[in-house]
Image 1 (spheres, rainbow, N blue to C red):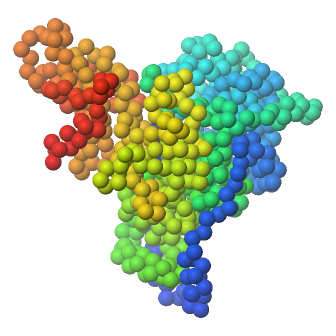
Image 2: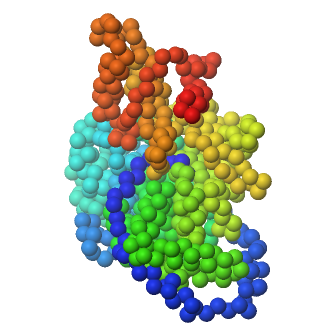
Length: 621
């Protein structure tokens, strides 16, 4: 799913693996009498019964009653990573959501207001998210990694009147607070502080809400949700006027749960591992709403450096990931196996277990037990989305016995549009269109490749305060994703090209060129520019590159005559370095190319990016 913008991967290690299970394979007993029965059963494709939720509140009401004794959230206490995971049941969570919602409505009078949530994944993030969605107003999640000026900008653009923030973001909030007079309340998570001016602790609001509910106030739970009403605002990128706000409704979010239910079976016993940021629709819908609808639990990773110990202690069964995370797990596990001196034996046993599985005998979990143990021992599903992944890595995940699924979508599709069905996964494909969606290839070329267009119940209401931008991408209900791909004869979707505008990095970051180009346009020495992700041989990551036409007249006026090309390039590069200081680090321009001829343009004077990139590829052949 092309939705994730920032994911930094620190170093982490697995202990040396002895792979003793492989040496003991001859001791394993196989019941050959069952082969034919299992084979017949496996040969039949099986889709699951689909759910039909209309709103998140419908899911909320049902789950807090049906699963009240189940654990929903597990997280370690703040600032103490050595402590055991604290467990929060559905009943406790439900009460906190209702009491916070009641407090926000009646105690702080925030009915129908826009409320920002910013912070790391934590229990109170989930509580805030559900509380706002299920009856308070419009939820506006923000990336905690944004620079302060971008946080301020998003709060202003969303017209938020309250900000709920984690303790770790307190310094950032303090620095921008005075610039946000429209914000009535700044609400700190994990704080019991009463109202002091505009500051208040979330636990104090919950306590005040509880007083009201104990007295019989049911106003919050009585709020009826219109499935089509704008209730969720998420910005696809950072600051400047080019950032797009995506407006979503309950129908969009509930449709994600319904869509997955047909293709993948989720059980009460499942435990999701939350490692991706909750401010993205991928994690906040598939990672939060889906387990909640099924009575499953979520173990919150305490930070990327703690992935291995947190998985080993919490023992998750499912993990949503971006390719970078899956690739690192693959690399670290295989490095450990190499050190054991048994890499050749492991590869041989992959072939053996694949052959056995093809006739209905699956002994992978026993053979590769040590790998499983290092991932907590119970992992059964890994879902990769946000960017393409090397087929070799996806196949390896399947080869060791873990269901490897892929998904496709965008923030604009809330996010799901296609997903690998459990019954027939195909590594390399992002799956079949989900039941609530249609996908077509618009104007395919001779190879069947064209732009991927989507019509879906998950499709956004539109871009926030930007009808023109909405009209540019939605045509008679069909959303032009801008991605290039094709569909095979069975309807499986394959994404083969980048979005026509957005640059998607290896780990799922979204970079909108228009944002950077807008800043470059303010440099007098630059006449025109095109920013793109340059593919460089031997480099997995795209290099953010600015192709620039110099404004020679201004350069002569500002810097003198008779400058050679290298001097001109140096002048422009120094100006670009100044622009880089105002950008989030991953958006920074790394390479400058001087262009001497004009860009090819449309009749509306927009640069034909695809044509220019094709020229670049031809030149570098």
